[in-house]
Length: 392
Length: 134
Image 1 (cartoon, rainbow over the protein chains, first blue to last red):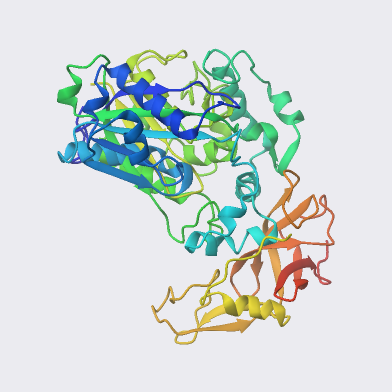
Image 2: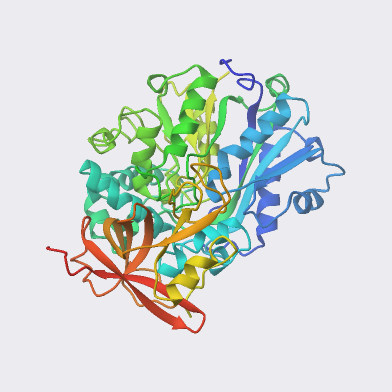
């Protein structure tokens, strides 16, 4: 598969690996990442010694060199970090693809591992985020001291305005949660395996940051995911069908902030529009070519807004788009077939990329017919990224 | 303990203002363009000549959150937090006090007040404006 950009089709995800997803892993964040990297390498049939590049999130607590030490790697030729929380997820793959496409590295592993439930919980107020000595900390001076200090609350501010502008309701957000939990219910690796919910369950769940209910919010999870990126040529000799990287984009919008881009006339998430336009340009595809997607779901309202920014429907049309099971398996655009971060686990978007690969391979527990192209997105409300993965 | 703002050369005037009972809006001395939050450059004319204007202290709710969980240091739950379109033409986040959580709504008119935390920090807070007719 080759699109119109220089990067399209020049690299592929050939291996995926993960730890179990839990609420208390019982081991260090570094160990989780190393385990996931080893699992991903075993998955594709390469050797750990083939790795010459590592990339992760700026937020990850395990450096590339620490992971390399535990893996016993003698050398690394490429290593880098991507900023802005979960917005980094697909950009780690973009970095790996660019390194592979340019010959800077041959085998790059993207990883993310944390004890995000048993140690540092993202759902709590982070004093460290408010007091970091950089421009992000200075930006947070305009929100945290005023009492706006959790991810859920920052999204709730956007969600309330979206409801006001477009007549969206809490039930419209809830349909995302119902879809995710339906898909998780059949995924043995999901924390909420065997535990679907109804829209009534969603409505009855307690308010966290009004208008967001508890069931609008992703889980907090312990775990790690790793992805192996190499060239399509090398992929031919490996164990798995490659998921070719047809497009890989980052996006930041005008007057961009981290979770609090509130000062634009029309608030919303235009940074995902930047990603979307670039995905379509690089791939030569359009939304009508896409049978399913993995849309980052830390909070349900942003899934609706992503459908609009990516062009699956028009502005303000997502509440209608998601009705009647459209985003569930069997619907016209199934989303988050692994259960998403509400249902499977919150591994900062990296588990969603792994699901995109499984759909291309045909090994998802909720397979979508003819899933030859899958769109995957990273964290919303922040500078973000996205991918189009394709069958070869 | 309240969460304290990180402050630098570009933002100190704002916090000096709240201590003086003023809501200061960053303004370009060269072209007059206002912005929020503050920064060292003018986004309109690129000048580095920063000044400010003291706002009248009134604004309109653009959006809001009722924060119920989890606890936030220095605050009592629930917290009402609004995005406020300040009449001078900029938008800022502010805590709303003295308004019931089922009363706040988009379009409500607010007036700024100042909450002295200690000798070094005064936070702006917003109350329902007398003019609000709802």
